[in-house]
Image (cartoon, rainbow, N blue to C red; front, side, top):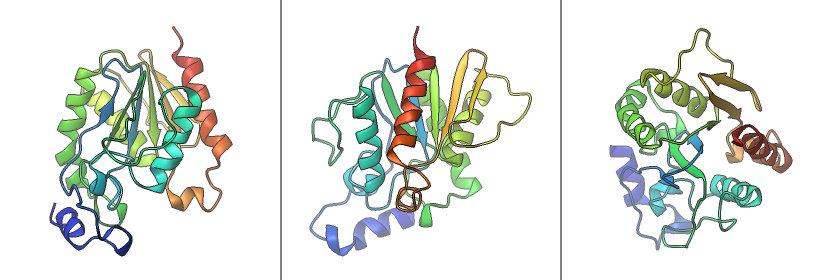
Length: 206
């Protein structure tokens, strides 16, 4: 919490004129969503600045371009909370509610934020497909659904891009996170990311 607030006070030069949100974030999207995305945490100068997850940073640019391309978002970019973005059939949340130092959450931080994730899952009654954005998001989604008694896991699934698992009728797909570390190096390409949402639509059809 102290780090999140310090970042909001100190800012960075390119956003020196912005008023940072600097508070915890909730998920957002369609309350009737059948697709749930679980990421890591708000970015220090993205969601922590704008007040909406995956908004105002390069990861968000990648995510919303892909969601728009797949028909889950009404526009391909997410700049600020009042930019008119709407999601259809999709809800976005994260393992942590606050930006952690160096994007490396501690076990204590994950535990402290888990009740909020569990509460969101309890309200999302129509989810059929869960996409974990990055290993932490993927594992947090599995643990949350297991803790909620929604699924039973006999063997821990291995994270890998496009790896797919089905537990008690709920499909989990793992994806590399659209972080700059992955996208700038080519570990995650646009065709690779687009394929994740094609897969989600294919298995999520009723």
